Length: 87
Image (cartoon, rainbow, N blue to C red; front, side, top):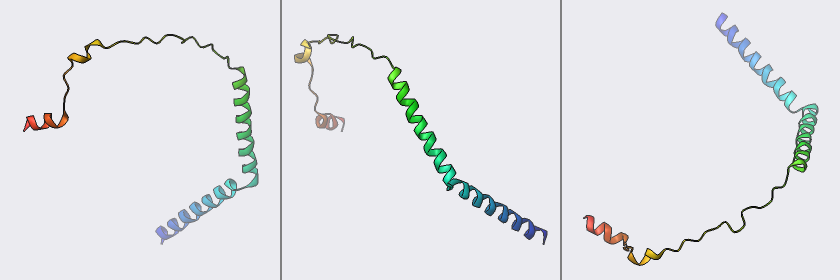
């Protein structure tokens, strides 16, 4: 008897908790506050982006090209021939 009452109270508490959480989450006040906070974040990002310094490009003409003269000496491998040699 006490076990059933205890389970019944647990179920009622869980249902009330879910009801109040859902009621608050879908309320107009919560929606307004969430939209306001998102708008504030966007404003803060825009202000921060305006204050960022723009750096000059210092990477011009830094690429060095290396000529590979030893390509003629490299051995060409064929994948299928390598597999056949293993058998």
